[in-house]
Each structure stands twice: as structure tokens, then as C-alpha cells.
Amino acid sequence: MKHNHTNYHSHCDFCDGRGKMEDFVKAAIAAGMTAYGVTSHTTFPMPPVKSLQPHTYPLYFNEFARLKALYGTKIELYVGLEIDYLDSNRNPRMPFYATLPTDYTIGGVHFVANEQGRWMCTDGAFERFSENAHQLFSGDIRHIVELFYEQSRRLVQCGHFDIHAHPDKIALNASQFEPTILQEPWYEQLAYNHIRSLAGGDFLVEVNTKALEQHGRIFPGEEWLPLVRQLGLKLVVNSDCHDVDKVESGRYETLQILRQSGIKTVWELHDGRWSEQEIRI
Ligand SMILES: [Zn+2]
Ligand SMILES: [Zn+2]
Figure 1 (cartoon, helix red, strand yellow):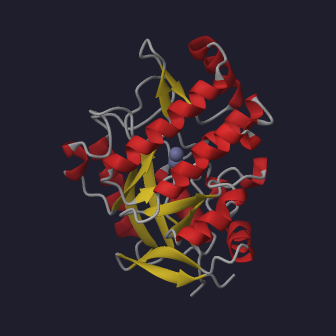
Figure 2 (cartoon, helix red, strand yellow; figure 1 turned 120 degrees about the horizontal axis):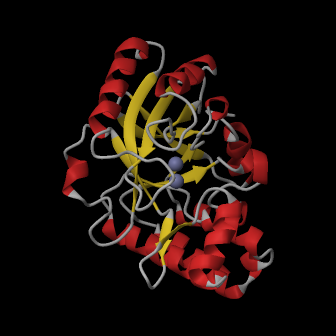
């Protein structure tokens, strides 16, 4: 068996992924992966980005069940959801999610709201981020970043998820908006406080490789790995793929980066149980 050849965070055309769930599963099998998890986004607060809708949840889980029956001997398949923390009513604690047949859930922050209650996506294409930052926040990037980490703090307090997605994801768009932002003491303090708060949590912490190929950045960023190691966070490496040809994008390089940072293990789900596995790449 190939070691560390897993991904538990992926999208498809039930949400904003570009391709059918089946094509992602086939790509994971073709890549020789041993375990793969499908985790579409739960309902977003605003269009136009596609996410699961009340009537598509059953279709999503039915399609997963069909694929598991079809390909389950070739690869371990799991199904989850990437659940946003939006506000005190819409978050991973919602009783609705507990009624769904998930193997695990991912908790993440992708939206912040301005004082008029208008949502802005902090993720995705920089052009849209920049436009929204100007239109909805008068270009006040510090305020947007502060809101992102405040939402992230609330997510951790809320709990009811198994994996914390991409802890400092805002770093990518924020640093394109203002290139020196990640070195600002106030930014460093916010990111530090958040990563520090993950210690002892009842969840795994994702190392997200989605942007490594294109932007040279993992989440949490490499600069935080000494702290991550010191805190002994339980890490799971995920590609968060939205494209069929990216099911394992950045995985190998990220495992090497972790090893170079003195991190020797990651967590993997096999036979329905999470366990600590040595990085052998
Ligand atoms: Zn995400
Ligand atoms: Zn995702």
C-alpha cells in the first residue's frame, strides 16, 4: 500500500467544483490514492458561487452511495461536508447536519459580513475579493482580516466539526491586496492567536495544499509550522481540489515541507478510524 496517499477534502459540481463527483473519484483511483473524501460546501449565504441547497443534499448523498458501491473495492471512499461558520444560527452546530449520513465534517470560514449584513467571500478569485473589499468594506483590508479571524475564533468555539479547514486562508487574498500585510505585527498577532487556539481542540487541523502549485503557499503557512509542531496539532493534509486533475495537487511537496519542519506524522482515516501515521514520503 502506498503511504500518505490520501485526501479528505474535495469538491465537485454539487458545489463549486468543476467536474462530476464520479470523475473526481475516478481521478483519485487513477492516481493510486488509498482514501478519498468528498466534502461539498454547505449552503452559502449569497450567490453566485454554487453550494449544496436543501433539495440537493439527498441527491449528493445518494450519488456518493452509488459511487461507493461501484468503486469501494478500489479505494476507501468517505463523504462529508465543508460547513461554514456564518453566524450563531448557521454553523456546524445546526441540528440539520447531525441528521445527515456524513463520515466526518470540515469546519471553515469563507465569508465575512459588513455592518449592513452584506456578505463577502474571503476565498476564491482575487479579482472578486478585491472588488468586494472596495465595494463592501471601502478597501479596509485590516477590518476584513480582523473579521475573518473573529469568525474563525467563533468557529472553534462552536465546535461540532472534525477537521478545521485552512486556518489562515485569508493570507492569500489579503497579501495580494496588500503585499506587506503578513509581516504586520497586528496580522501576525491575529494569526498566532488563532493557531495557538487550535491546541487541545477536539478536531484535526488541516494543512491545505490547494494553492501551493499556483501561489506557493500552504495553509497554515510554512512560517507557522514551528508553532504547529510545538503545539503538537493533529494534522491532516488535504488538497481541497476543485478540479479533477488536482486531486493530489501539492500533497507530496507539502509532506516534504512538514518533514523538513520536524513534523513526523499526519492523521489519516482508514477503515472508518482516524489514526496517526508516519510521514514516509
Ligand atoms: Zn474551504
Ligand atoms: Zn474546500
